[in-house]
Length: 161
Image: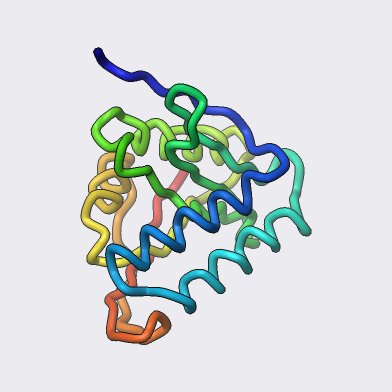
């Protein structure tokens, strides 16, 4: 039987779940541990504290009522929207959740009147990178950093809206 997903906007309690699941998955998959969890906590807290109605949003994907992934769009200033914290649970991969979440952000950013959409990711995150390329985004900068305890190649992606 094929599972389908639904997408909804965030509600109370979602930020903690998003932060927790991503911290666990990034630690298990890449060993990013505490530094990544701290970054996730900072991003989700700032999102709630500074939320700009009509300019920012978080969407939660669910499969059978269970969180299957999330994505955020935040106001990066200078009329640039930032795509943040995309993730899809392992059990939901291959169901089209990631592509649907990215499409949600692109559509919202266009409707909100942003000029550009930008994100920061890592070369090691191949599935996410495929989604970004399929949406029309391109790499505009790369830089090796040590923020998560070992060298990682960070990438900035962007698209004109």
